[in-house]
Length: 63
Image (cartoon, rainbow, N blue to C red):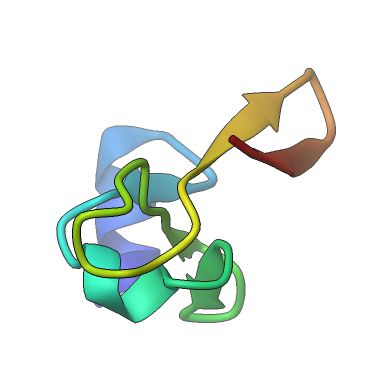
């Protein structure tokens, strides 16, 4: 499904923070790398982080 959505939206990745408890230790990549879940809060006991997006590279940094 994510492959179809990316094609429709003309994007390569979907970045979301909908389930912060899923990404407690850092970003979680799913759907062959097309969907990245992040958490920017420590409310759920995790480590907040941010993505750094350059033209051809995505990295993350703990806050």
